[in-house]
Structures are given as structure tokens and as C-alpha cells.
Length: 295
Image 1: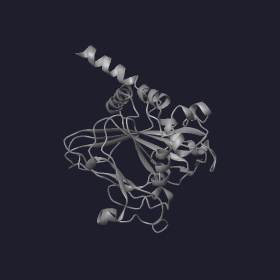
Image 2: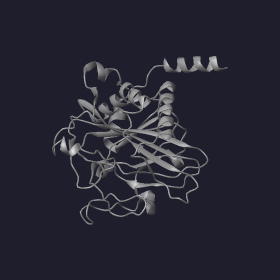
Image 3: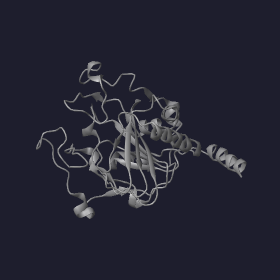
Image 4: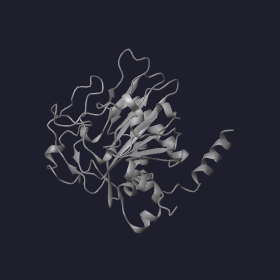
């Protein structure tokens, strides 16, 4: 049985790789989020699971618990571990994720920003509230992209949701997830988020039931949120990518994730040309043809 399973995985790995259509690229640029079905092979899913297991067994000092003590489940996050976890590094540098991000962004060059682990254990009630990612970061610019890849089946009720078109701006006030306090930006300097849950029908909300191998890509300004989970575990590896116009934007506060010492090495407005943010993909005729189709 194990031998048959191994052969099945090997054959699945050899299958024709998914290609990114112009319609998918157009949808990403219009809505700020798309789902690419079956992008990761079974071997890549297993590689990510191995990395997550190592990460969970040895959390970094950047790890944090995002659920309350009375939550029957447990929600843990961790960041920036690709240099310490070989499976993460292998996936980030050798999978199609960076190429797909580059094509969606229309970038000439794609750099890694950071990896992000998000694990909700069974029966976690903690919700991830509606928010944009970029206001929490130390970057400015429009060419950016995040991938969200679940390593377990995710129901439509527990999946990541997006408000289509919100990547076009404006920036909205980032608030602490636990207490909803304005985070860093002074009160009144940015608009507050609309109350999306009060009238969901007023917004174009996107979300997909997902299987391992499916990957969601989204812009760092696209409003998104996620519910808690039921009896199933939800392991997610997210990777953030940077395009051509992204520059360093030092903040007076601790960003999420923090990059200690970076302000001493990169000036404000400088390109993200630094060993922490290696180049993953560059646009050539061959690199574009490898992942796009005319469908």
C-alpha cells in the first residue's frame, strides 16, 4: 500500500503544471485576490507540512499566540523563518509561487518579503478581523502580493475572505486584533474600516473552499478576514512577495513582523535590495512562457 501511495504521488507530481491565464491576471488586478487551483504538487504540500511541523516544534522569538486564554482552540503565528527551516527555503525558492506573484503584479523582478505561519488548531474560536496588511508593514509601493496556502482542507465558512477592489485604496486604520485599539497611526489620520459584518450584502466578498495544493494570492491592501475553525486543523503557510516599486518605509513603531537593525542599513525610500529580501524570480521570455497560457 505504501509503495502504491508513493507511485501515486510521483505520478501526480509529473502531471501538467497549472498555467496562469490572462483572465486570472485580470481578475487579480481588478479584485485584489484570486484562487489558483492545484498550484502546489503533492510533494510541495508535503514539503510545506514538514516545514510547518519543524516551525511548530521550534517557534522563533517572533512567534505569538493570537487566541485568548479561554479559547478552546489555539491560534499561533510565526514569521521570517526561511533562513532557519530548510523546507521553507526549498519551497520559497523552487516552487512556482514567486513566478505567479510576479505575473500577477506585472513585475520585472520578485523579491521575498517574508514567510508567515498561521495555524488554527481544532475548535479555535479566534477570528482574524477585517484588515489590510500593508499598514502593518515597513514598505511603500503598489507592486506587492501575498500567497495563502492551506495544508488542510478549508471549508467556505473557515476560509480567508476578501472585499473585492479594496486594494485600490485608501489605506485604512490598522487596529490591534484583540482590543481594536488604533495601532501606530494616530487616531483620525486614516479612515476607519467600514462595518462589513453589519451588512455583508453591501460588499463584494470573495472566498473559496480550498484543498491542499490550492493557493490564494492577494494584494497587501485588499481587506481580508477569516473565521475560527471547527473540528479540523487549519495549517497555512503564507509568503509575501515584493515587486519593482516597493521601497523601504521605516516606521516609528514596531512593525509586524519587525526587522531589527534594517533602518541602519536601508535608507527611507531605498529599494529593498538586501540579503533579507532575496530575488526569487526575474521576467524573461522563458520565465513568462513557463507559467502563462492564452486560455
